[in-house]
Image 1 (cartoon, rainbow, N blue to C red):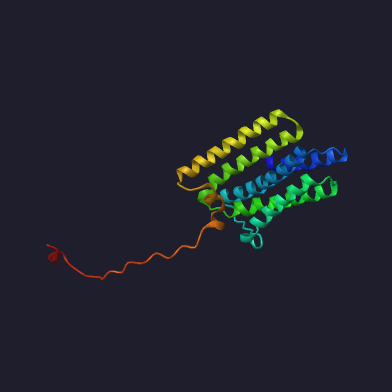
Image 2: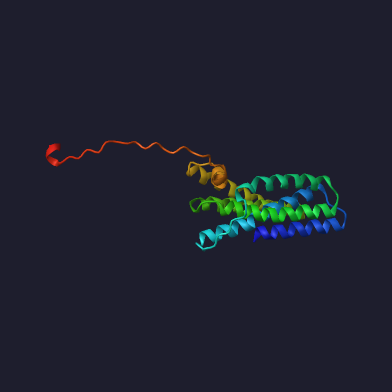
Length: 203
């Protein structure tokens, strides 16, 4: 719910300032990051809950293996366009795109993580919620939100790193393992001749 609240707050704050024709660059960046990170946290947490609760529900997005990189690249371009433009209409479209694309990214990434790696995914999502809260703090000029969000975000990131070290794996491999795992060669099977024996022969 922290993620969903970040999305709603970011959209509302941007439109409120856009109505006053006073949207600073820092406010635009904070609103975009709050929307993007909050959306990933929201749907990612729902996917994690469904897996951990053993609910028999599966839903895969079309072309799920090819969605992450294009959606991420378009969000980077959207952030650049949002900062460069003063158009409220364009800014609204960019933030709405960030909202729906972040929902897709959060679900797509978390839903593809194996059950054994879900504890790490939970700590990463917890870290995301902290950074979304931190973005809200910048956007609303509230130091308390910024401080608390930074503490949650950094502690979640550190815990995720420690857990990955304990599993002797990288965070990238845990979160994006299904997309980055290279095709491995099949292990060669050693063939040996079968020889029967009995206790007398052994003695």
